[in-house]
Image 1: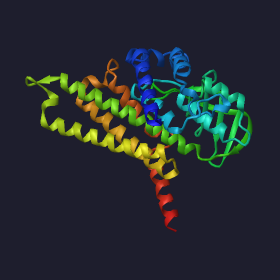
Image 2 (image 1 turned 45 degrees about the horizontal axis):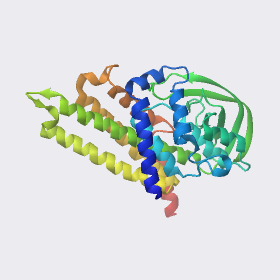
Image 3 (image 1 turned 90 degrees about the vertical axis):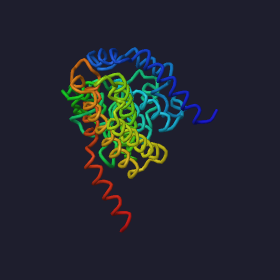
Length: 319
């Protein structure tokens, strides 16, 4: 079985788990829970899929996979806005693996899913910060492990992603930062593409059901063109993001984040418009995608910041 076949099997497995254990009603229940995610589903993902072990080398109790393997799971979870600590845990694993002396015990616990990890880029908005056991801060050139810290939840617009304000009390430098922020940007872009694709699917399905003037609104030519344009935008963005996953770099990470943020925000906004007034009600899921689109675009830095980074990289490469 090729790597591509294995990833497709992984995708199908995660998709089936999400369909069974994380429908929209379950997601809403999870975001209201104490930890902000379904702990039973998290155990299933770790025990049956090995979701938290994909990037960890076998010598540390992992599966010895690549960024592309982790991306498959993160995209599938992103489609359903499924809240889990996978993104933060995966980034913490990358940070610990980059340490001068990797903490084998911590990596094993993260790989098993018995410990939750996160990486701090902005201490005021840390993904899974209030549920994390292992915290590493990426300062741009160094990685600092926060061996003791305090965390408090932060109120945000997006209820599907729990953020926290985290402050260190005791820290230990562990090594040079190889570019964890770029890995974070790529994985977040993967999640955004998955969510954008699912948001578009929901919109297309609705336009097939909503009837006006005796016809489904999706049969009107003007709406067909709009949805076709959105489909092209999602597929074009997916190509950019896939390139970044395959060949990670500061440039590909910036391109992926810019494209994914703009596309997801566009698809979500069009989804709101095409659903009409029902889309902004709490009972409908579309507003959750709209909120996730805008919150994700600001997480780890807004698109204009990545545009400036990209500009600096281009200028540096030509001088």
